[in-house]
Image (cartoon, one colour):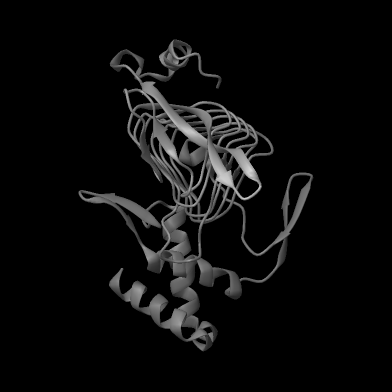
Length: 271
C-alpha cells in the first residue's frame, strides 16, 4: 500500500506522470481495491474517523486516464468513463432493475439496492437497504444494517481532498427525502424523520431538556431527529430558517429494524 500511495501522491503533484503505465496501473489498482472494500476513502479508528486523502486522489485521477465508451446493460445504453459494477450474484447482493452502481463502489453481502444510485468510492456495508431513488454520493460511507429510505440524498465528496465524506454509521435509519451532505456524520442507530436536511452549517438542536443544546455536523447515537426551524434576523426582517431537532432517543427495545416503526410512532415522527 505504501508503494501504491507514493505513486498516487507523485502523480497528483505531476500530472505528466499520468502518461506512464506504472501510474495508470496504480490508479486502476486503487479503484479496484475500493471496489472490493479493501481500500476506503474514510475508515473508523479508535479515535474516530480517518479520511484517506490519497485514496480520494487516486479516484480523482481515474477520470483523466479513462476514455469515454458506450456501455450496454440489456436494453439500456450509457456513454461514460467508468464501467458499471458487476458480479452481484457472486457477491450476494440483491439488485432490483434500474439500480446502478459504478465500478469502484464497494457494496457488501446482503445489501439490497432498489432502483437507486451508488457512486464511485462509496462504501455500503452488510445488510443495508438503499431504497427507491436514493443516491449514495462519491466516497460516502454507509454502515451495516442502515436503511436509506425512498428519495434520500447522501452527498458525495472528492474535492477538496481534506473534506470528510458523509458518514452514516451502523443501524441508522434515514427517513424519506432526507438530505445529508458536506461531511455530516450520523452516529450509530440514529433516526432521521422524513425531510430532515443536514449540512455542516445546519443547527442540530437537542430540545429534550429544559434548555436547548446546539451542535452542528454530527447527530449523536440513537437520536430521533425531525425537521424544525428557528427565527433569524435579517436586514429585511425576521424569517424562519431550517434546523434539525433532536426530540428523543431510541429505546433499547427498538434495536431491530422490524420494531423501528414503533420507535418513530412513540414520537409521532413521519418516515
